[in-house]
Length: 112
Image (cartoon, rainbow, N blue to C red):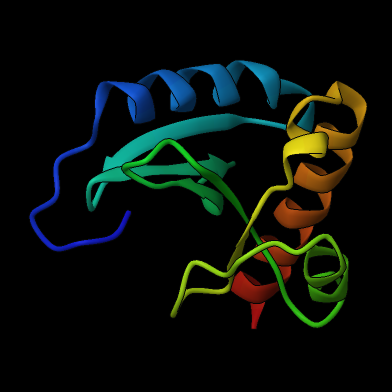
């Protein structure tokens, strides 16, 4: 996800496949190649993205943004997604917790 006409890298594709498998506990998780990266979806609602550099970002809003800012995560501007901290990526239970929160944010936003 990023530059127009960018091509998804093999690293981004590998990361997408890895995240679909790792995030199965969140729900019906799928991925789709888009804009040089990948969107990660729960039941058809995008809650995460992987950019062409194979970096993972989760959906945020006012309920969880502070958590990402406190961790020093950068935003995937102008979209409401923040990079998942490295320590969260390494901790399976934390990754699922943060992903469930991002999925809830995405589903709530979709209802508005």
